[in-house]
Image 1: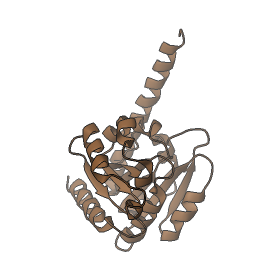
Image 2 (image 1 turned 60 degrees about the horizontal axis):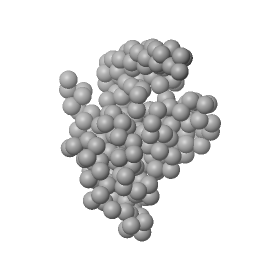
Image 3 (image 1 turned 135 degrees about the horizontal axis):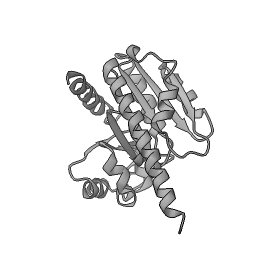
Length: 224
């Protein structure tokens, strides 16, 4: 117990430095006119499939790129590269989240002025990423129909730190007996009025509506 105050202070200093770096990143993004979206979820939520679909659809009309965080492999980056968008993997090792310094380092070889949208796929985790600002304009929290309806109740912090909730794999919702009403209700219990999109990267359900929303948010930010 005697070491606890020291650990708390170290954590505060780490988060403070992360916030400083994130603010600098956000300013760089704004100056370059690039809209930045981060994605957080637990493993297996369909986050990479959803992002691949976004990159493919949006890449037909805009300049898009992605950074992908993973503990050990580059599998997700290789998969996302099929979209034709520039993709860079951030291998975090034992670290269970991305932080602003990792994002800053990964961007060193890229010219942000060449991009309209940058997507940052975080490590699969619903706990650690909630504390780390990455300089993004929009944070999405994803939860699939196969994970049940109570994810928001179990992990309220990540839903409160995100801007939008995305329910994935809606093409199999009926097969897994997903209770849509309960899921939406639980999200709004934790975060009243939170914007929710129900999508399927496989069937395309909800993707057009989400892209329209994304374009609108980007225009609003660029108009400021």
